[in-house]
Length: 462
Image (cartoon, rainbow, N blue to C red; front, side):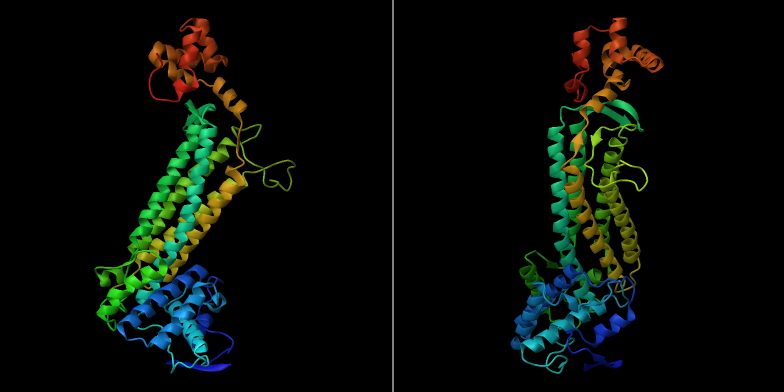
């Protein structure tokens, strides 16, 4: 054990850990989720601390020897080392101070070790005076959240782009499979199965753009704002430099907010990101539910799609296979929608110069991105790639449908079309058969009007 002291008193800290007294207090105080800080967030925080150290060294305030040791420690965290040294619960009081101090303490104790000094020798390198120089939790925490969101969103966007691409492949593969379109869950007019797949791809790409726009908007940061946005204890040269060093460290372009007070006390940018995830989740729910309905049956449902069987569907009904992959995508999206509510409540509960609810905001956004990324990849790999159409069933429903009568309206008029529909419903006879029996159209013209090319594209068959 080593003894460490803060202004509340002294605690014994295990000598084999890199965190210190303030982390230990947070570890004892917050038992909420049973989780610890997201590793991506820890690494993002280390990038922010590295950028701050570089900026402070450039102004001459941070001693080069100390700064180099802190940067080396930060690089080790960024490389994936010491990630087990961040035991703080992600939902916590204090606006993220416990996370900030956890990062500061690990950086400092590793830096001390690099310089050949003992852990806890804060008179040589201090978590507050050096690792936190020209900073506050109130600027370093939200900036780290933004860096982390930007990093995580790339994985989600890659997953969504893959989903859209696979849907495009199905659109091409199924372009000549005609099926019955449905509105109000009732027969409507024909559509190609490929056209449906293409529509899902289009909606997914709209989600991608929505997410990109929201994430791009949070590349404005408040580093240098310190406690309330006034920049107390941060030199103007540091404020000017730190966004540039952060851009260098992350490989992305970050800029300093024009109004640091606004950027410190308002978190609406996080609401935009969460909302983009929620709306994308709504699109994915619609798609997953369509797949479930088209695969329903198989003998007593619609049965137009054959989902790959992934596991037995019942503990009591032999041979039953359920659409489990589509179901898990739905449930993931429900959780994302719930997370968005938590984010919304957190965003609206900021008071005066700070939003102290940033821990719950960031926790839910991180989870939403992680969950969506995993669920979308699962949907593509376990369902979409091996999806098969049931062409015979699609044709069967089409042949027995009354909805195709709509295509005849320009040629026989609404009254005759209504009469045909009424007779078809009453007798069960196909529309084609009734039209030919009544001599309303010659066979060649009827087949042309009811061909896939004519019924699934704009225009009137001549």
